[in-house]
Image (cartoon, rainbow, N blue to C red; front, side, top):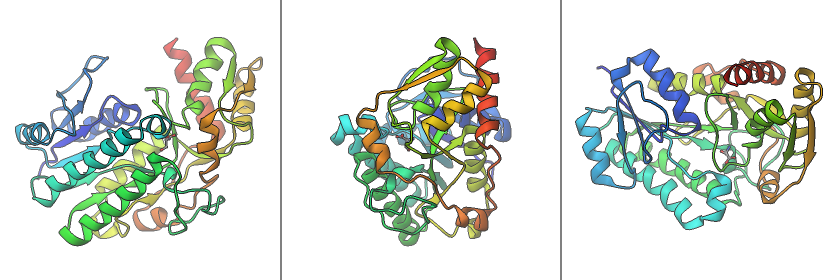
Length: 313
Ligand code: SER
């Protein structure tokens, strides 16, 4: 059967890159982008303006395009959800129910839903955090992602829904900007380094977090979705590891490429969120079950970011 994919939240940090890559693989017409907002950039394929919380609208878009797979990327991220806790919960949970229910009813066949390192909390082991461990998230975003993971597994076990998920680390890319996350600094720092040769970081200089370069994240997502169903043994969400670094470490990497770059620190409430998350992740299960392997380390990522952002100037 031809895959007919709907990407919900296509204008966001992941959506922008995922749509581009899926269209290369599946054909432009087979990947419908959708977002609650009118797109800012010209679309090179089908687009629908869609509020995922509106079930009727969602169903009519799915029917119109004969969609059989949904990538649900719409969400409030960690920092924004702390400012709007009720809406964060509503959007992050009800969007998932709306999509999982379409799969339960047999209208679509496969679902991708992103989870996050935010499912972990201050009582979780911080180094090489294992797949199965203590999970007591303290943010609205983390609570919604952990609850979502449980529901994904539940829908798989109970209704045989083919839902797949990754616990993304902080994502870094040059093609799109993140919005409202705690790990956003690792993208902003490159923009400011090239523009002003200076950056004020909202995290503590030693706040190490798990991160990943976008080409790795997109490749992981598509490999997971394309893997044979029997290889997907975890139906909550897979740990996924790339790079781990602190603001100080990424700043010194940037300095290697931009020698007069200066960083200063003004930690704000986002540093408290970051303090509750792991420093590094053990993703043995993803490696063993469906062959995951990351490609980018810190210096390769930083060089590629600087090279590509410089071209955009
Ligand atoms: N990167 C996200 C954030 O910072 C976590 O998934 O909110």
